[in-house]
Image (tube, rainbow, N blue to C red; front, side):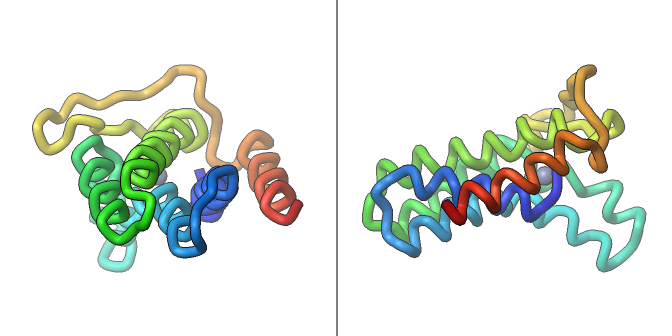
Amino acid sequence: MHLQTHFLSGWCIGNLFRLNGRERLFCALAAALPDFDGMGIIFSQEAYWKFHHLLGHNLLFSIVTAGVFCCFSRHKVKMLCLCFALSQLHMVMDLFGSGELWTISYLWPFSHQEFSVSCGWALYSWQNILAGIVLPGWCSS
Ligand SMILES: [Zn+2]
């Protein structure tokens, strides 16, 4: 899925809870941060294809980022759980909405087993466009 959709998913869900502004930002970042591994595109197309959906799209990354956000939050247990869940949501959204070619190595670096779904849709699909329309509307209401 698109980066802005991930960011908004975290922002919208964060707004469902009693959190301060920084914690809501952390929610949005937790939902979007796994895509940092797409920055390989800055270096080369090969780096992008090799590392995207690998370095940031795994259980270890989710635990570490949730822990870091938790440390800088007032509501520590709530933020630990919420940031972890939002990171997991990112991967579910990617599994379904990034196209059939993308897999996720959820257990990396401990295992290179790749996960995918056969019922996903293309990145530029009506489902992703609809999510890109609904989430900003939800955030502004
Ligand atoms: Zn992603």
